[in-house]
Structures are given as structure tokens and as C-alpha cells.
Amino acid sequence: MDLKKTIRYLGKNVKPAAEEEKISVVDAIKSRAAAKDKKIVLCEGEDGRVVRAASACVKEGVARIVLLGDPEAIKASNPDVDLTGVEIVDPATSPKLGEYAALLYELRKAKGMTEEQAHSLAQDATFFGALMLKSGDVDGLVSGACHSTANTLRPGLQIIKTAPGVSSVSSFNLMVAPEGGNQYCEDGMLVFADCGLNPTYTAEGLADCAIATAKSAKEIAGLEPRVAMLSFSTMGSAKHDLVTNVQEAVKIAKEKAPDLALDGELQFDAAMVPEVAALKAPASTVAGHANVLVFPDLQSGNIGYKIAERLGGFQAIGPICQGFAKPLNDLSRGCKTEDIVCAVAITALQA
Image 1: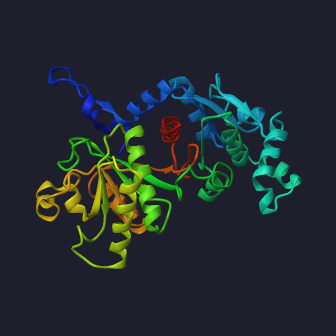
Image 2: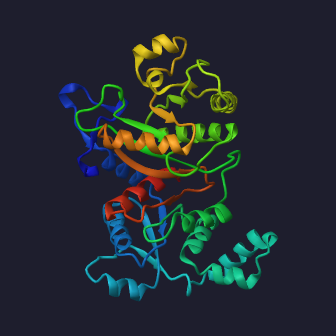
Image 3: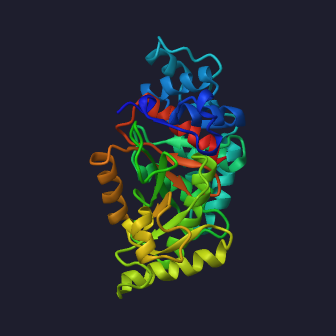
């Protein structure tokens, strides 16, 4: 399904019936990103999709763009792309290279990195982009169109690192209800985590994922988060170490974020269906009305979002990284230009 054909109402901002209008999720995200006027670095100037996305972002006002690569090679390979307003930087010849190499050396010398190694590695586009982000010269980074996830996340973990108080980086997917809506999706959109990054979680890591996902749901999707910590048990109905891990995560999350509407452990139906919630978790204010679903591990999360996508008709946007000290996002190598533009907009909203 084309993202631009995916429609939802904008929650609490919906107009009275006579004035009601619809807007695509992507256009709403782009509009909100444009208002923030952030600068985002795209690390893969060798990829035509990225070059076209850079042009589109500037033309649409989504964000200011720094595109990394050899300016002459980029222009020669993309003669039909208007790059007016796009700042193109070649890491190998940038006047900032020495400064960034010195920063990389300071960050990694305790791990055995030499100054020569730092100077060489700083010329790698993804490392250079991460160093730009670390230095505050850009507000966010997007990469991965033609490189592996590891190639994108490694500089993030080594240079940007996790946000204070966050034990691990995680990811989430925006799940947009199909046109016509879904009876269990009153906001028109759900947020699923973690569906793409961490195979397993400690209780603390799962709690941090839940808190970060609630924050993302509010900042990016415009939702007032109601977080369900999912399990195959509801409020102690089953006994198992896997259930205990979720129960401990709920306890930690409530201690760290006492004002957050979060509850669990909940089975999926108890989280989403009011009639089931009334039977299984009658005291919960989240059960039956959840819009943020935190799966206990990557296996269940990945399966869950693909079921919603393929059988339920939901549009999946993501996975989107969270938990870094500054916004850094990985693309699918099968991404389209419009997907990159959307990733830029989301990254700008995270900044």
C-alpha cells in the first residue's frame, strides 16, 4: 500500500464533522518536521535514492540536508536531480576532518584506537556523519540504504552512545490502521516495540524500551500513550520465568516513569479489547484501550507486526531507532526514495 494513501484522523485535533478533513500520516509527520527546521545528514551520496530524497526533503521543506560524498561524482551520477539547497560534504576533503578525527580518537583511545586509525576511520561516511552529530553540527543521521544495519549502528553505539539512564537502544514501528479504520484502534495508529533490533531483553531493558516507545509515540505519532506490556499471561494468570521478566519490567517502568499510563502483564486481547479487559484486568485503565504495545522479545514483536501488516492491513513504518543520545536511524536496503524522506522527517521529530 502507498503510504500516501494511508489515512487517519489526527486524534484530539480532529475538527467538527462539518469541517472534518483527512490527512495522510506521512504528510502530517512531514508537516510537523518542517516546523522544527532541523538539519539531518544523509551518509550515502553514492546511492541515487538517497540523492533524490535529499532533493525532495529540501524542496518540501522537511529538513535541511547535508549529503555526504564526492560532490562532482554525485552530480555526475544524478544529472537530472536538482540539488539546490542541499549541502554536499566530502569527508575526505572536509576542513572538519582533523577535528572529527581528534574527537574520535578521544572517544575510542581507551579501546586501543590510535590517532592514525581515527583519522582513517573518520573518513568513512557513516562515522563522519556520526561525528557531525556528536559535535552538534547536525541534528540527526539517516543511513543504511546501501549498507548493513551494523554499519549504521556501530558508529552510533561507539560515538553517539545511549541516552542518560537508558540501558539499551531499541526500535519501534508505527502501525497505521487501514483505510476505513479498525475497531480496536481508536487513534488510527498503534506503536509496536521492539520489532527489529534486540532479540532478548532484561527486565530493565524492557522497561527502558517501554518508556522510550511511549515518548516516541507522543513526539512522532502525536498519541497520548497508553502502554501495554504484553505476555502470554494477564495479571498473574500464568507462572513462568518469561512472565516474571515482564512483571519486573512493569515494576521498573512504573518506578522510572510514575506518570506514564502503563500496565501489565497483559495478553494481547486484554490489552486491546474492552470486553476482554473487563474480565481479565478490570482494575486496569490501560487494558482494552492500549495504543502502545511492548512485546516481551524481538521474536514475538517481529511476528506480531508482520501479522498486523499482512492479515490486518496495517501499514508498518519502521523500524525506527530510539534510545540513542541523539537521533540516528537505519534504513532498509530495499527502501524507496519516499521511505528515506519519511525517515528524515521522523529523525527530525526525534531531535
